[in-house]
Image (tube, rainbow, N blue to C red; front, side):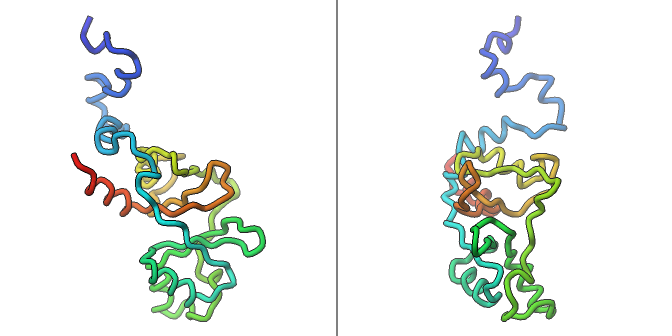
Length: 178
């Protein structure tokens, strides 16, 4: 009997076995555990979400993003406050530059809509472990494609609490003592 088999199963799962270390198909949870050490999205201290309405002028949304140094803004319904989509500010700047939109056009002309029908999506809350957030950014959750940002909501998905980006996650790792 090896010393690894005498450990409680939960500890053994975290440490993995020699056989687990020889497979590279799965994300390395052990390195994630040492990188994030139990931290959650709340530990990123994401700034409050800044939302635009679909009828707001693009210039207003752009100014709001610049004032707060945001790269993404959520777009919500004026009536129901339901999350409709988002503005990717670097993409918006490109659309303005090539003339696809004008600064006095409404936000809905430039926003990227969330696909709701037929899509399973990952709910990201303040309690989501950073390992899951990294997996989400890398496209590993629900077999999706890589993501640049995550909309952070409450568990019931009623309120948008913030937006977390890959950059936020990278900065967290850099500033956290080893």
